[in-house]
Image (tube, rainbow, N blue to C red; front, side):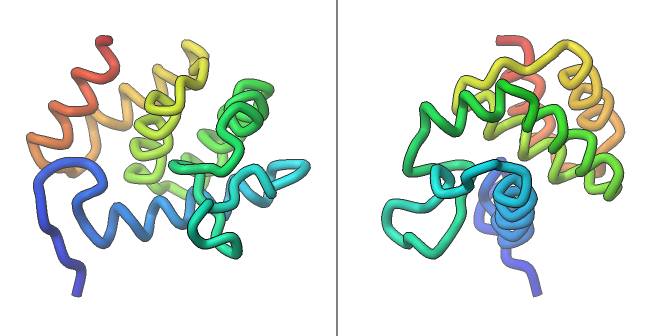
Amino acid sequence: MSQTWGPYLYQSDLDLCTLDLISTEAAAMFPDPNCLRCPLLPSYFTLRFPIDKPNTIRQLNAGIFHRLVRRLKYLKNDLAVILLAAVGMELGVQIAREDMLVVRMTVMKADMGAEKRGQMERAMEG
C-alpha cells in the first residue's frame, strides 16, 4: 500500500517510485549515465540529485529532456511527465515551449490533489 506523508510533490511512495522510473529512463538515454549517480549511493541513479549536476543539465538541454517527455507521454504516465518537469525546473533545465505545453496540458487533466496542482501551476508561472 502506497504511503503519503504530505499533499505536495515528492511526498508519497508513488512519487518517489515514479522518480526512480524517470531516473532509470534517463540513465538509458544518457551517453554516459555516470553523471546521474547518487553521491550517497553510487550504484543508484537519480535525476533529482545527480553527482554531476552541470553535465546532467547540459545533456538534458541537448535533447534528452525532450526525449524523456515524449517517452513518458508514450507510456501514458502523467505523474512521470509532471515530476520530470518539476525536477527539470529545479535543476534549471531549459524546457522548450513545446514540452512545457505538454506539461501544462498534463497538469490540467491529471488526477492529482489541489496542493500538487497548485504547486505545479505556480512553478510554471515563474
